[in-house]
Amino acid sequence: MTLKPEIKWGLEGVYVKESSICLIDLDNAKIYYRGYELSELALKSTFEETAYLILRGKLPSTAELREFTSELASNRELPKELLAFLRGLPSGLRPIDVLRLSIDYLGVLDREATARGPNEEVKATRLIAMAPTIVATYHRLTTDGSAPRPRTDLSHVANYYYMFFSREPGDEELRALETMFITYMEHGMNNSSFTAVTVASTLTDIYSVIVAALSSLKGPLHGGANFEALKTIIEVGDPSRAEEYVIDKVRRGEKIIGFGHRVYKRFADPRTVYLKDLARRLAVSKGGDYLKLFETARALEDAVERHLGHKGVHANTDLYASLIYYMLGFPMEYNPANFALARIVGWVAHVLEYWSVGGRLIRLMEYYVGPRDLRYLPINERG
Image (tube, rainbow, N blue to C red; front, side, top):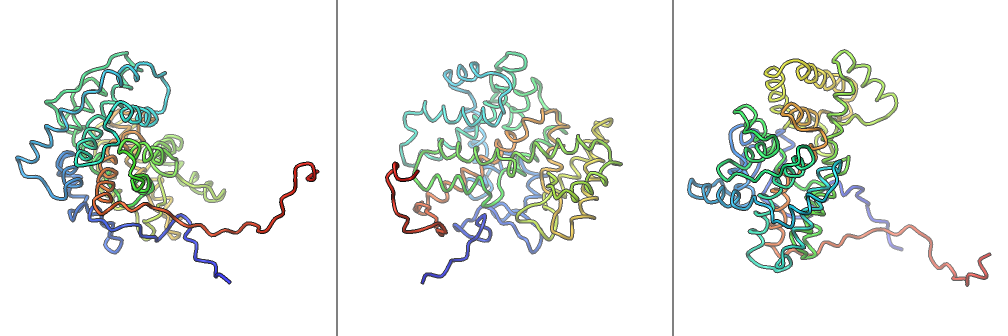
């Protein structure tokens, strides 16, 4: 008799590969990118510098950074076919779906999409560069009808801001958005990264891999939570209502979006520490309703700690990150897409790493619990 195997629901605690990209240090409440503490990178580094680190394993020299920055800038322009495709899309679509459809279309346009070889990193870099152009172009097409061209004299993050809002960011805005992109760039073997690696293990093309990862990310238990967390803060609306809101949710046994994480049970997500401070500084700078919303988020965090902290439910990144994007002026429906524009770097890094060690096909097992030895009856005998 075969013994029933231990079922790891949600694959919790299962290791699927070795990696040198990201360490989530649960003993010391820290996150590292390639050995560098994330909090330091998020507050001091740039998108280009951190993306180079994640993709190529080390911080770049001046010459290497200049070359990589130029490579990204020169690949921002969209093919005319994709621009026509975006013009034909209706308004009101979820931006992350527009990004997913567009990258799929780029794969159709690329006649060498399925060709294997050293150009995989070139294709991946092109996708990282084009993704912000896709999102910003769709936003502008559906708001003012324009399709601004990307600028090569601006950094990756500054150009995205410029294309989205039709103005260059100020120093405070640029630093805040840079911090957000670095923060969301990578986070170990999360659901969308596992999806990317699983799909990549079939040796399909990089476009299909990123489309699959985007399909995972948009779910409300993953990147979609970035949208829902902001809705929660706005719904509560005032710090004085936070306690009542949390108590009601606890009584009903309902999730409170912006709180709880599969990995962080003993303490809050370490990214919330510096994101809370960034959100506070932005709120103080902008004042008015923004300051009230920040105080509401903080009151929610305090209330959740009181009522659920002992159960391992703490604030996660989405609580303050969603508010930061809102204070920067992004419509809330763009939050998951903004998440994706950063995380695409991590997806690519994991896929290239997996392919570099042979890319063995991922094939899981399931334990069958259904009936056996049923007798087939012709349909006229089944009644």
